[in-house]
Length: 237
Ligand SMILES: C[S@@+](CC[C@H](N)C(=O)[O-])C[C@H]1O[C@@H](n2cnc3c(N)ncnc32)[C@H](O)[C@@H]1O
Image (cartoon, rainbow, N blue to C red; front, side, top):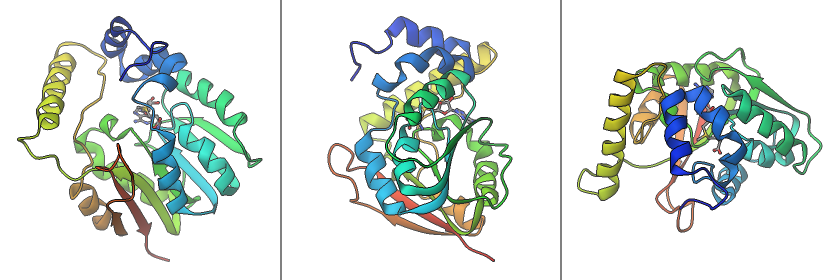
């Protein structure tokens, strides 16, 4: 699971004991070879489904994995938002070298406080829902709705709820319990919890915010077959 050039267990522990932003600043140079980076096979399927657009925004863009795909699929502008300066610096190098000549911009900011109004045809977010506290998910969806033009889409991948008897459920709950304890004992927090923004909660939040939601099961081949592709269209004039 972990690459020889990736972070050691000790480095991961130091990162988790710092804060979400500082942790990612430290992880940034090695992030590309961690299992936390969304695989290109997943990004390709999801972004092919999104189609060509004029403008796209990738939330929690990290080292720009999705932006590198978006550059070739976007006619006018690709924007990435992330809170970690270290991750944005890596994204800058890597997106600049990606195929496509479409201009791109990187913005240091919070996905829960976006400065955009009706600016994008497409919003994406991959591998980062665990950093959005459950209580903030309605605000997260509101921000996305506001950033999209009417008729624009929010495209992402998630899973159906994992049943409690599955070993993954127990591992995820164990990890979440450890993070709750860590965050109760030590500030600033490292916000990272599993099993968040899953279906059907994600669908319900999006529909409440005026989206029409399409879910596609079976879109991904092994080993990503459990993932569900979601295309949520913002209705309204
Ligand atoms: C696991 S990485 C995923 C990066 C990339 N999207 C990918 O799939 O490879 C999560 C990223 O979310 C960023 N992040 C966490 N909370 C955030 C927030 N509230 N607003 C913006 N970025 C955030 C982190 O700095 C990190 O770069």
